[in-house]
Image (cartoon, rainbow, N blue to C red; front, side, top):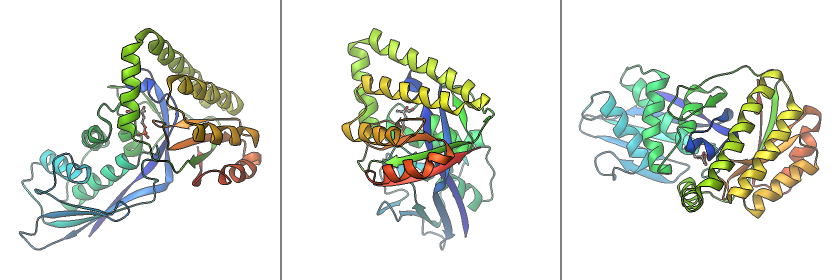
Length: 307
Ligand code: PMV
């Protein structure tokens, strides 16, 4: 039996604009993970995938091609030039589902890695990331590629569409609190809504994306220089632009407000919006107070530190 895993992720700045060629910054959240195991089955059994936390099962060859579980296996076997495989893939995940934390990408990455290990092959992170991107297209329609990149490389990344990810130094540890609103978010739907509004008013949306891109550049410098307060202010401004883009909700705004009132350096929605999570940046001495304030309103709070 083999086992492989991949972490959750949080986008610090730049979601949505990244789909339109602007940069974004994302970090892995290693405390929450998707794990896949593969056990051998007798010849002729075929490949069955069971996702325990999703309550779903897919059999390769029977599941539709757009089933994300089966698609992760299809793309992996095709890439490895394998006609079929006998085995049972079991997937578990502690990453909130539809919570803006990259659960789909992490589940796919864990499946790809486990199958690759099961057949004794080796793939580079770039190859694994591009297989996961194929699965992401089923979740998202037009994914930028940031989710698959950050969960596969498991490092903070500065990401530009269709370019190799850039890693960068973190000047001072970043204490983050990720609060899940508990309201599921459909990335495909929210990204589709932004596209419609962009088509209706391209000048306004391009200007919003440019402003977000500018914040991301400043944020990278702030992170490298260890300027935590400055980074928090940039996150706050990014949230305001996401509100203007129409992807925030009263619940997400409420979580952001709760974090700020309890002393966070900055807070914003993270991921597609429309539900899902917010991310708050805190000084370590304020972490407990901000966590308590978020726990009073959030479905779940996940603390993480980026070093
Ligand atoms: O909701 P999530 O965590 O899948 O994040 C989506 C990020 C977007 O920028 C909105 C879409 C994308 O493909 O980058």
